[in-house]
Length: 241
Figure (spheres, one colour):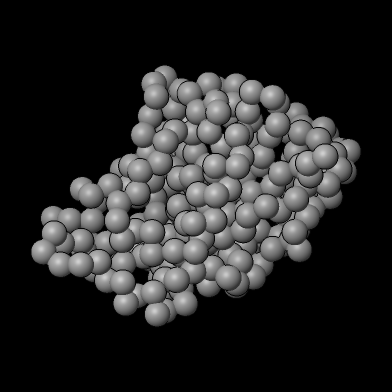
């Protein structure tokens, strides 16, 4: 939590110098059963709110929050999110008053709320995201070292062998024609995109599907070309049936 929040507090242009701060958790993620808290302690005692710790303007702060939450949901471990963070409350939490529900009149705050609901449903329906949380065999890096582009990419797998690919871009710009190694050639559905316009994003995506071709790269037998959104995350899954 501390490493991740410290990384997220950096301006995107500086994040390449702190890249392994955000990947370090995978060095020990399978040594115990871990919770992944973004907790009460992080939004009180003068620390401010979660969203207001993100750099940039209003849109960039909300996009950064969406990317952070997608990374939290897809990282091995069990998620813990404190009240108000699910819609990007700006004020520090206080036990003496209600949450700032009026934020939901803003489409960006409402977009975060909607995205968290969709993330929960996707998590529930996608065993690769939770079945092997404490098993190193359920996780594989695709790209851990792309500090230049501020991109992380990895696979999550379940007991049946099904896998999903996760790509998180912590840069403030999109990446066009990003080459992503994959474990299988053929079609991969884009089942989630934090930059969807319904969430308040800019709509940079892959029209619901990418096609991986058989070409070896970094030990993987296939590659696909992606549009990776700014301050955003996409999740790919092979079509069922």
